[in-house]
Each structure stands twice: as C-alpha cells, then as structure tokens.
Image 1 (cartoon, rainbow, N blue to C red):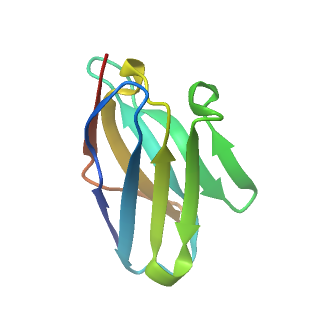
Image 2: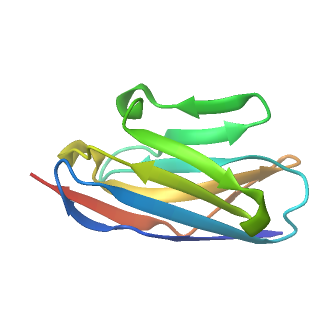
Length: 114
C-alpha cells in the first residue's frame, strides 16, 4: 500500500504561481512512476505532468509553465506552477504507480481567478 497526501492548493490570480507537494508513505519501494493529474468540473481527469523511468512528461497545455520534480529523500513529488491561467482551475491529484497498481491522493483544489 502507498498513501499519498497533497498540499499547496489554493486561490491565486491569473499570472501567479503555486507549488503543490505530494508526500508518499507506506510501501514506497519500487514506485516506478509518480506525478499529477487534474480534473475540472464536468471534465475527465487528465495528465498534467509525471516522472517515469523514461523521463518526464507534460501535457501540452502546461509545457513551459509547470515543472514536476521529485525528492527521493523526502519521498515527495512537487509541481511548480507558474503563469497560471483560469483554465488551470481544477482539483489536482497526485498519483503513484507501483508494480501494476495506481494509487491516488485525495486531491487539492487550485482556483485561478481572472
């Protein structure tokens, strides 16, 4: 089992920045991918950014604005979000893949006002 706890969401004006954090606990050995999805009201949950054994991946809509990073010493993954836009408003979920199972955090709300 892997437990994921996100933090760092909030309300920010367009053009501002936020940094999301996700701390993993439990059986974290052999996590082979970790990252972030988001889900806006009435929409599906989409990939934002991730770190896998093959490298990092970003959604086209966030390239150049968001940066995902991992700190193995603290079992954490971060999402630095700059130049935020109202369309970035969503619940952001941290995920981790271990063996053949995907674990999810509870989500953190990000709201960008225009």
